[in-house]
Amino acid sequence: MTVLRVIFSILVLHVACMIYAQNDQSGRYRKNVNNIFACVSNAVCSQPSFLVAGFISIDCGSESNYTQNGTGINYVSDDGFIEGGESYDLSRIRNYRTRVYNTLRSFPQNERNCYTLRPQKGKNNRYLIRAMFFYGESRGQPPQFDLHIGADYWATVYISDPSIYVVYEMIHLTSSDYIHVCLVNTARGDPFITSLELRPLDITMYKQPSPSSLILNYRQNFGTNQTVR
Image (cartoon, rainbow, N blue to C red; front, top):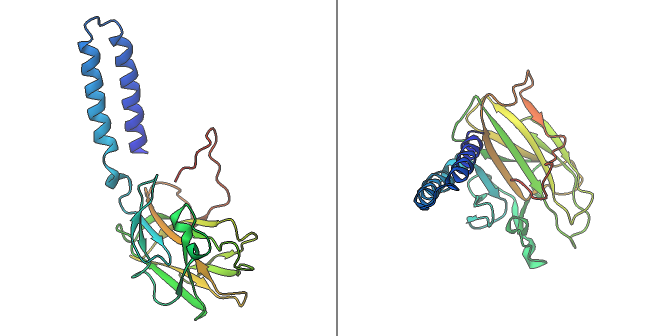
């Protein structure tokens, strides 16, 4: 929210200065305003590390790290976040334009397999946790399984159409320095996951009584035809 307020203030200042500059016959004032605006804009917009500080973005099953085109978000392999499972490369069947769709990790062994996330801010902070599942066409009927946060039930992963992705999100206030996101086999096929993301939130956002988690029901972005990550 702070970044949005700064950007909005810059835009308002720029418009006001440009209107005033219309009366400047020499053009020197207009040139100075543009230079100042460019410098301030670059100072804000050239700091992706500020905008993504504390992000955890895992491409499950991937063997390498990369930066996603368009968003500039750095995705990492799930090595070091989980033990076990089998990586599967969907690009052998079809190469998807969105790179994160091209791999997944499947868990044919064990009833319960957990990713361990260690947020930079640690415990007593609020985080958005997003798990994405994309099974891919030509692979038969997708499995159905449960998703847990630690020992607590989160959701049952159900995919009606293997050609579309399914996302589950929650806002979680953690009491420890790590978060376990677990896939639980319920004897309806091998659990799998495509990507797992964590985003730190301001502790004052989404204040809620016990229990300390909120599960996403629906989100709609009005007035635009663009997807916001």
